[in-house]
Image (cartoon, one colour):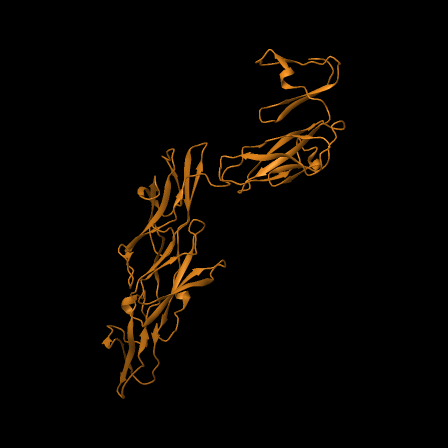
Length: 415
């Protein structure tokens, strides 16, 4: 809005732009609704009455720069900021800003000379992690900067793809792009991550979609919004194939299982025995977690519950179960602990383990002296071994990995 002040009788007013009368603008005030770049120019008001004429000082009107689009480059996977050079203002350079960790506070990313290509690739932002907001200002030849609040922010689209392997479904969710108006989202899919084909379009009122045909292999997805008028960058260093930009693209995401997406299945240990009279801190076994999310890492800790009676007798270091005391077979030959495995997403499972104490200083019967019948067997079998002096033996039953399943003590017969 322009306004002039004049005193006198029966004054007449005529607003001019670039020396040309503005039709119908004959009052003290000139209002320009919905200003765009066509309104840039030099304005003044010619005032007259019966006593004479006068004119106001000319005023230059320039439009503060706006971003045209932000998108994710399909070539580099980085955020790309694009603007157009439509203003006639004496611009020396452009400042590009990105919102900081504080809402509404913007940090300057870079200053781009006016003659350079009107694009900026943000090499510090990771579009696979979150969306980002950007603004632009201009520096004139007097080194004055336009007000950043005059620039409407543009925000990228952040896409998340999740998969449920049990239901064989692939779910897409994303947040809105804003910076220009649009009515439709376009969903793109690729088997390779290179050549994408549009597979679905939907209203911009929605922000999720389930792929009705996810298939069995790896699939890659993008979300796009279409700008009514393409963005055409200008400036030196323009490369072949650079722009125009018609679509703002999201990050690319795939249907592979992500870390922490599903809870762990179970926990195993490669050994659940330790000899008696060993020093505290000796390794009992190494813990493993079976998890559909193969990229997950896991942390272990003791928890209360069924099977946690002897947690205090052991410690956990990383994925190793350690003894926290020296054990005596005669006092107690079996212990019970309960361990929780937690993945990166906070999902967990809990498993109780039995830990067996192996006695030391006893003679062992060689494997060649043991006889089993029947063998193989389903329900039961008889184990015989030479014991003419009727000494007391213990039989330890393990699987092929060495995991103990049963210990039978006080055997004084030969079977």
